Image 1 (cartoon, rainbow, N blue to C red):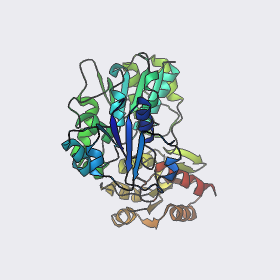
Image 2 (image 1 turned 180 degrees about the horizontal axis):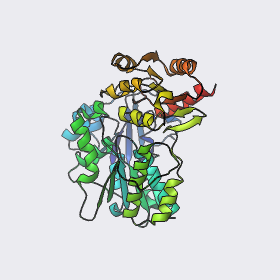
Image 3 (image 1 turned 90 degrees about the horizontal axis):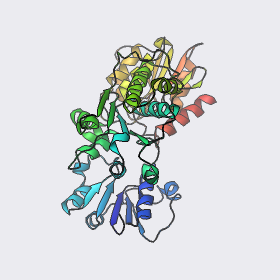
Image 4 (image 1 turned 180 degrees about the vertical axis):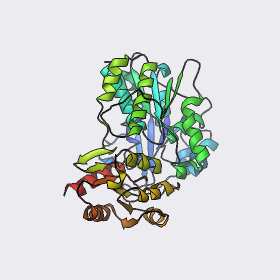
Length: 408
């Protein structure tokens, strides 16, 4: 990248462009960082930046001429339907290479040492189980992709013996498959499940499912294709609740055995893994934070994780990703109370045919209403089944807000 003119499309509210921009500057590139958000809206992210003579910032707009007059464009995977984006189209039409941070990473990795995990739900837990298993085996490993920060900062430190565990989103897999001439898949690929999700990004469930399949599409002879199997009984007892987490654990074990890990040490690491924040996280005696639940199927799995669903007061709803929410509405007939929030609240409540539901609007109102209705031994569960972007910056912020409200 030395001497190249590079445009980074999107710093983002979560600072997604920060790592790649720093790496590009360290490589000697001249960088234009552009974002539709204003400098004021990105003030907290910009505090992490130092001024640089080879860095130019453009905020509050994208300009086609910026995309046309560079050597490389680094697109943010959050950009919806990139094939139809006018600015990316301008770059492609001008003969500019368009790529992403994850492609820059995988180009520098030994593919035979890479485990990739994708799925509509459970991928963060599964990659973390894999990481815990490999650490238990004392095998050098790094964790990256859709979980954690950019691996570009440490890619030079990854040697031939290091196992790289990547969480790969459907958007990342589009860029690693459909967007490049020669697609890329990991040596060990894991697919936890596929259910309707991110249709606002992909357009159709068929396109979304096809991107998930890219985790296997470009594999070669000798590679490993692992699909979560609900009949796999490899684990009878793990530290996390929910049958789905036993399926995640079984897939994680298969993945590490494929890479050459010791089975007993791997089992120990997986069994002792206590879970990630915001994923069926117990935050009170009868309170559970499952803010990472962003699909209706994830909500149903969360309800299924408890012995008696009729004791659950369930908070659902959020940003509208244009998916079928009927599975969330159906939970009203199983739980003690259903409390809907956010953009999808009205749709969820209106489609309830068995049981009752309250349109609470906000998380604060939902917690207050549910708490008033709870009896001794009841459970308060936040498992929204929808993204958080209508009322919160991300699912972490939503989960923290829930924990704060229930701690009062």
